[in-house]
Amino acid sequence: MVKKFVISSGHALKVCGAKGILEEVNEARKVTNCVYEILTEQYNGEGHKFHDDTSTTQNQNLNTIVKYHNSKIRDLDISVHFNAASKTSDPRGAECLYYDAKVLSAKVSAEIASVSGLKDRGPKERKELYFLNSTNQTAILIEVCFVDSTADTEIYNEKFEAICQGIAVVVASELGYKKKEVTAVSKPVNKPSTNNNEGYYKKDTGLYRIKKACNAYNGVNFGKSKKVQALKVNEKYTIVDIVKSGNAYRLKTKSGLYITAKKEFVDKV
Image (cartoon, one colour):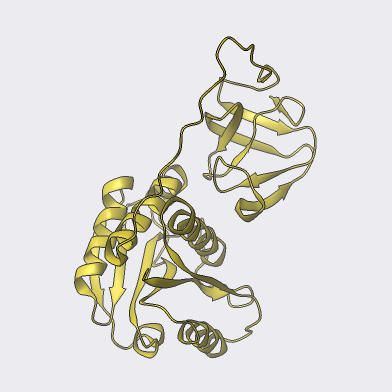
């Protein structure tokens, strides 16, 4: 029987949490969505994800999140947060808080640091935190990085996918998940390809303008579940990489999101 998990983003739409260069509630949702998708699509993981869209006070928010976790049959509870202290250009790093899961928490913070270059602040015992002491299964609370550290936020934006993969790798190992096998599809012999990717930008990073309304996604494989936001005509984005996905190309933004590289939708400025 496959073990299950519940992962939720800290805070709520109306109880936003830390604000700095990044806004905690928004980034926690992105990480939660991405980790959930990796565990359920790339691994044989099973579980649930949750975002609080209704609470208006901190106490209500905490109760809502814990109630959701405790309503599910699962083996591990995960809460995703971002830290804050005071604005600085210095690196601060990732840490993982726990009630009685020190070893797992140490693995999570170490893996985030290893794949991203963030400082490893290690595991921190926090028995007084409501999420950790009120969920009735093993629970960890991940503090991905500091929203008010320039060094942290730059690394986070650049290494978003790697950080989510790192978290997923540790959780998968803890719960015994296995990577799904990818079955290769044989191409027909001596048959001309009908695929045409000539309408895409394939190189040249820098500033791009949206020329036709489209969407931003949190991965190169576009789909409804990966959609993050709608992009408006004439908005401009700094592109740090161009990635091939099948027969299509994706523009990777400075914030770690992906948009189409199709010339029908974007212009190189």
